[in-house]
Image 1 (cartoon, rainbow, N blue to C red):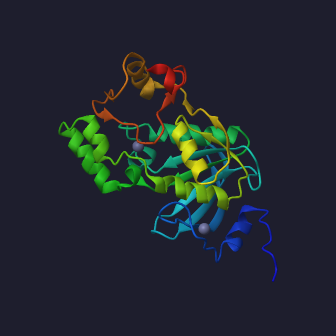
Image 2: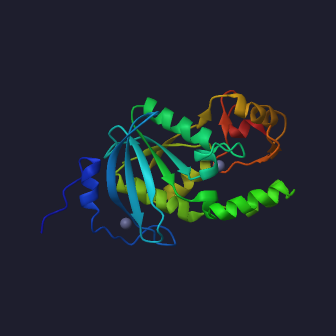
Image 3: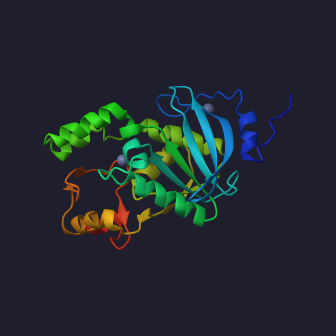
Length: 250
Ligand SMILES: [Zn+2]
Ligand SMILES: [Zn+2]
């Protein structure tokens, strides 16, 4: 029997994973396979897109890869949860698009890095339920209940999928771009070597100016300048340049 050839390029991963099945990660035994790889030049820099299939549902997760990462150590990594309303439509009810763009720009500037785009709209509750939660807020539901309606809870599955995707790409160790130390602990629990943390900082702009000012004067939730409750839909608190680290602003 031939030993499996180590993957040298991202394209090799497709062949390597053709029949991949393992016992999976986390309580739901998530297993993912690399199924397609292509160049994806973007306005944020040169990327390759890596498409993954998984053994639990039809969600097609992807990794945006910049530079050489296979077998590399200390690879900058960002986990981003899909937000159609923010990422695509430019919604101001959340900061997802700003966070996504800032991460892609920064990873390209760092020379190598991976953004994992996890297709778990509204933290896994789905698009329809997210819009329903927005509708409840429009009717005056308070932001704590709105958060619950939006499915804001730790979801072990998020990290299990991400951990397996990190392993599939052969990243030896990662520096996680996050303001949430819990995320690092969760990835480590799934066997990922996290060698450091890169604070995820957004440049101040007219859209987050209000956020900046409000966060500076009080903690908790707030209504944005468009008059809508504004929520942290990614699992990281947002950090805007000049605000300092999350722990400092209490
Ligand atoms: Zn597997
Ligand atoms: Zn969002």
